Image (tube, rainbow, N blue to C red; front, top):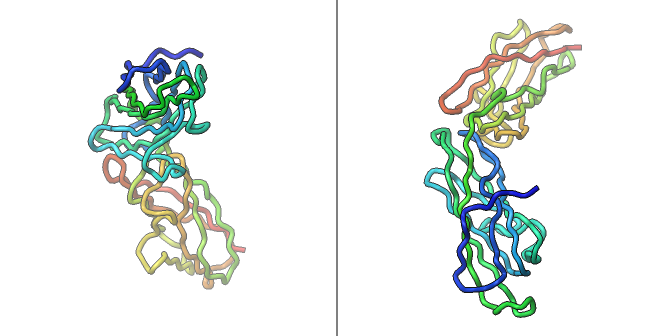
Length: 250
């Protein structure tokens, strides 16, 4: 599928490799979302030693693939762009909730049009400006994967409740149990009053993580119990959501 051209690229020295971006806009992100984006490049002749850096507006966090040490991004296939083919560069952006309109990023690419491919052997630079669309998030803020927890009567151990993040990142994600049936005691990691995520404080959009809660059923008879959950997190503002988990004691 042919794509319309991105903003014109400019080279620091004359060459006929004609390296250029052909992505006018990336995939859309939502306010509060972090995600990997890509820009497709092509050239008329083969160039090597590819390196791209990205400049984003203030307040938008940038990250590169770990394979490059986090300092830049190269091409997906290798650091060589074969003439007349296409390859892409990938980078990650985290858009704050305060950003609600499209914005642009500038990609600056250095490469060598080497003498073996008919070039001068010089280090050359080209740049392209690409639009990142910003669209409202859709769907639930998160999905609770764990609906039922089977436990043994007389047990006392931590159980996991898993969650899947929605489109956007949810900071300060915690879970607290509500009213408990007589005979059930619960505890939270490090003797806190709630349980945070295992992987950190933020439920990343599209990722899974869990909270651990200790269930002491020594004084609880066998049966099925619906336990209310209080889920709190920060999106554009602090949010509290009611949920539940069913504990089956056997």
